[in-house]
Length: 218
Image (cartoon, rainbow, N blue to C red; front, side, top):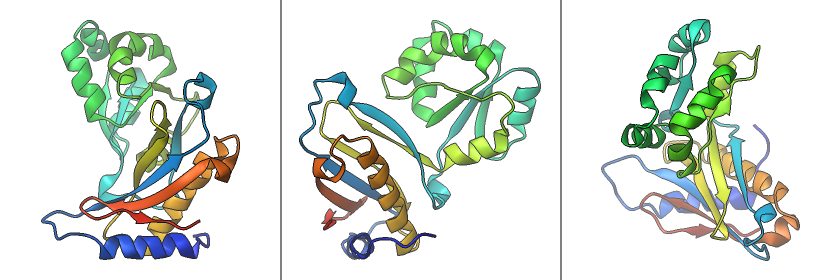
């Protein structure tokens, strides 16, 4: 694990201290406010999938795999795949908007056999797109287990209409250092997408599900 900023680590500790009692385990989120970016220009907007360096545990992403033949069989045996949709099942979804919306809401990432990308776009494209998601082609020859593991521990951030990005970076039971490293990873990737990097960052906060936001002093 890389050395993380003491400021991120201090913010994680304080965010946990600020947690209100709850019957459920709480998550930790990073909120990054952006400044000096004209979001009316399409080139300034982005959607970025970020693989976190530390495990998300019980909050691992739900993965849907759309495949046929041997790839579908492999997917059904792969740890971390929540569901497999075959060609026949995908074809049956065409025109069924309600069912498509349910699937788009249920899964975080949709990995698709390249030969089925056109059909996946037809059946699920609109439902996924309205939720900021897109079908992800499975690279030919790739190891499905590694690909699933990568996306299961990834988060998606978007900069669209509102000058802010936010995402999950950990759980209350996680080590402070691991949450801090996840948060710093997200910040660095977001800065990589901004023309002026840190100068385009207004403020950064860490927050638990039921706690007050804690400002990260950078």
